[in-house]
Structure formats: structure tokens, C-alpha cells
Length: 312
Image: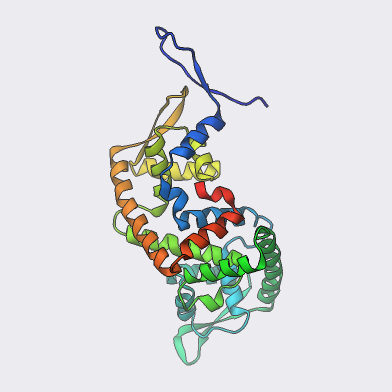
């Protein structure tokens, strides 16, 4: 299929020739215009690495990493309190209930009343749950080895140790394997960022698209998706959310008047300022958790796994 070209058409009375811009060239321009936090903050790089892990997990029967995390935690022992397990893993209680409900419906987890405390549930694996856990452990280990093949054994151990620092201390013994550590660290940092924006109606995930659009100006939705390294459907859902919130509007693409382009509204620019404060606060907290030199070391190791994650 021939490569499509976007043409910037000048008015008829101008003598300059028409300038043709290929999709690749335009996307490169956008990537270069992104502000430093998108390439520098560990949690954005982490997001890109998790996306790579997730895209490689299509063969996995249960895609939700929390499912496996809880099955794995129950693999060594029954858990006397559902609430306690949620707190140990750093999982919101409401989400914990939803996950346990799902696992119970699939026949993988059994939830029974604690005879000593009728308000608590004892969680245990069923025979089906143990079989699923063993199968998933093997799959996760094989996939993890494949995805971290660019790292030495020592580097993988260092990466796991750094990722563990981003988790609650109580959760660290329960989260094993690079893939699980990446997923849980990503979830925790996203939640911390959103907590800082509580009451504003804003989310940490708005920072990347708003930053890209402010830095580079109006662009097509497809180009934005490529710059942020997300799928078309994911970009569409994100843009719809931003448009509904009044932070972004769809105008005409200056590179092709037949298409729509996205641009940030004045409320969107103000929102970006608010989100940027939360991003900086989260970055400071991450640096503290990782300790001296830890942030640079973690970024370097993550980028060995997924070099394109810097632009995610």
C-alpha cells in the first residue's frame, strides 16, 4: 500500500511550493517537541514497559495482573482476612472485592466466613485455582525471561529490587517476578498520581496527551496515538474523555483540511498546569523511594527492555 502523505496547502497567491509532510516526519516532529518529563520521569517509562509486557500477554488466559497476583499470594497459604490481604498488597478494598468475586465465579478461589469473626472472609485456592496458578506461573516466567533477555541476570535482580522499592513494604514479599513488579509498581504510581488530583476531575493520564498537544500544536488523533505509543482505540477513548471534559477540541487539521485535528482549549492549558504539579510531586516521591542513584539506574534498566518507552 502506498504511503499516505499530508500536504500543507498554501494560498493560491503565494509563490512558495507546496510542502509535503509524511506521517513519519510529522510524528518525529511531535516526538521531538514533547517536554522532558515525558521522556525523563520513571513512571512514564515504566508505563511504556508495562504496555510492552501487556501486548505480549495476549496468550495469557487471565489478562488482569491482579488476578495472578492474588492467586500467587494464596498459593502458599490460605488468607484469614480479605481486608488484610488487600492492605498487604496495596489494593483498594472495592477493587479487591471485584477481583475476588471474579476469581470465585471462575471457581479458582473459595471464600468462606471466618468462624472466629463472621465479618471476615477466609480466602483459599480451589483445585482449579491451583492448576490455573501453576499454568500461569510457567507462562509468566517464560514471558518474563523473553522480555528481559536484554538484561544480564545481575541486571534483572537489580531491576526487581528497584521496582520493589516502589511498592508498599508489606506487599514486597508477595509480589514476585519482573512482570508482576512492573505491573504493580505502575498501578501504584498511577493511583498515587490520581490521589494528588482528587477533587479536580483530572487524571495523571491526561498529562501526556495535553503536554504533546501544547508542545507541538494541533495534530491528528492517529499521530498523537503514535507519539504516545498507544493503540488507535486507546487513543480514541482517551481523546473522547478529554473532549468531554472540555480540555481538548477537534478542529481542522492544518496539514490536511479534510481531516480533524486535536488542540488544547484554555481550560485544558490550565488543567495541564495543575497536573504538572502532581507529576512533579510524584517524581519527587519516586526519587526518595529509590534512593541516591536509584532513579537513573531504574530508568536505564527499563529502557534496555523497551527503548521506545522514553517517548511513551
